[in-house]
Image (cartoon, rainbow, N blue to C red; front, side, top):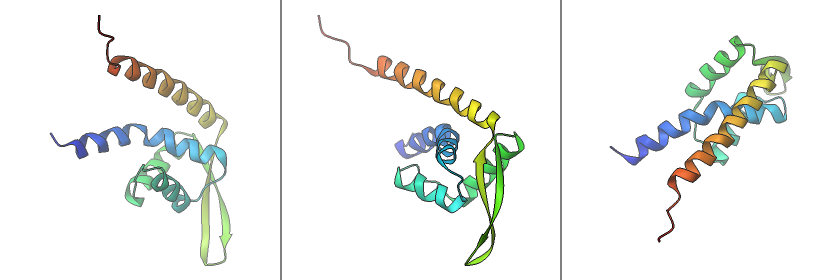
Length: 112
């Protein structure tokens, strides 16, 4: 098994949390979301992000507003719904519990 495959699977498991967290801070355009994910080493491509945004929108966790663009057609800017904010809170709580469990289970035991 290659480490790169394991890393990719770990990232896939938390990408939803990261995307919702980014959008919760401000209405976001997909290319801005991708840029922020890349900056934090959560590498993602448009082919991964757009289906995720669509799934989150269909689940009523996200909505979008159209905004005019000076460099082309109007753009969709995504924002969290109230339900999306509650879902993000639940994911964040779960993430904290998970990271604590991983920390405890991977911690080296003190020698006797």
